[in-house]
Length: 191
Image (cartoon, rainbow, N blue to C red; front, side, top):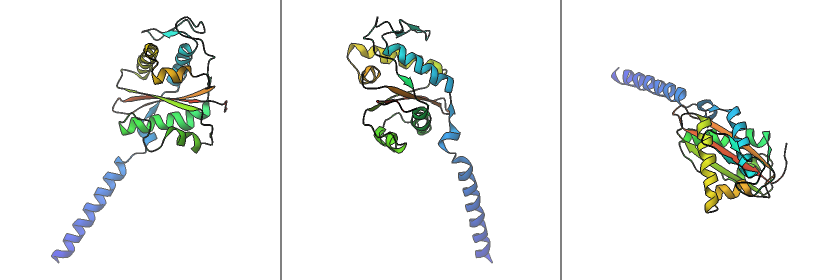
C-alpha cells in the first residue's frame, strides 16, 4: 500500500514538473518583440553612413549622399527576404539566448544558404545592448560603427563594402530588456 502511494506521488510530481517546464519553455519568437519601424530606421541610418553622411546623437542623418564625412558608396536596397528569414530570426535567437555572437547554432554562411542564398558575398553586423528603447540602441551602434573609420574596423568595412547590394535588418527585444540588431549584407539583389 505504501509503495502505491509513493508511485502516485511520483507520477503527480512528474506531471507537475512537465506542466511547469511546458509552460516556461516558450519558443524564441514568442519571447521577443519585433520592431519593424526600427528596422526601417536602422536601414536609413546605415545608408546615411554608407553614402558619406553621419548620424547625430539625436539620431538624424547629416550629409546623406554627400561623401562629406566618408567616401560615398551607392545606397543598399532593403531586402524583405533577408530581413524576415535571416536577420530577425537570428536577432530573436541571440536576444533570447542572452549572447551576442555570430555563431550561435549556425554560421552566417549557413543562415544564408538555408534560405537558398548561396552567393559567398555576404556579411553580418551584430549589436546587443540594454538601451532605453530599440531606437536609441540603433542610434548608439550606428554612431559607434561610424567611429570605426579611424582604424578601419570590421563593422565599418561591411557598411562600406562595394560588393554588397542589399541588406536585411532584424531588431528584437527580449522581455529582459536586451535588444539586438542584426544587419545581414548580400552581394545580389534578391527581392
